[in-house]
Image (cartoon, rainbow, N blue to C red; front, side, top):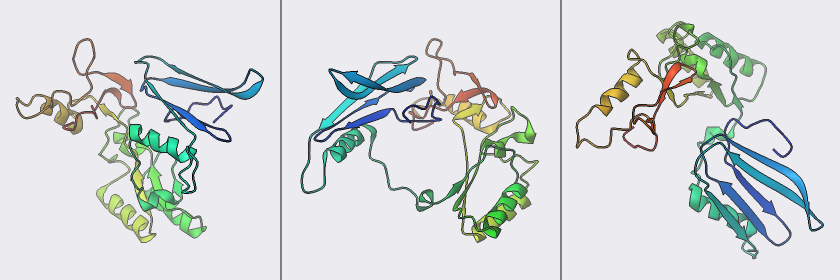
Length: 243
């Protein structure tokens, strides 16, 4: 938001300007840590905005769009620029219907019983909620601050009977439930997701491109390791379909 110094959790750096008879925009292509500043600016006596992009690293890559289209069909200059953007970024698919409803998400310690209670309270007090979210604490194995193992519920707070009870309660309330999964994978042999990835990388050719199941260090070509919520972690290479 203009004038707000707080960073967005995730964002698409796309800025579009609009005047009486034209529209112009720029989208910034860089996956590194990026800052976008929008400030008031005066040039040759005209009031406007000054936009600056700063990325920590990576190639200088951006796209500029402009249009003066305005016709009776309603496909005006703004829509033309948005369409041009979609040819670069891809057209957004129709969203699942529940994504258009009311959502509840809270970063906090969570359990199946906690979710059941929240679900009941939203119904009891008449709050309109369509989707309940759980942040990554659902996967905090044995409540260890570095125990996050996604795709596995914390066995202390989510026993099989409790999970069934939770799912039934939320379904009976005609709501959906979503769990957050982060892209980093705890790098420890006892965690089946990381172990399966390493085993895939050891498959012989010509089984396909399984070499880069995990992102690799650019200098050593070894699996890249970094520190994140689970501690020592690796990142799945989402540009590899086999990964």
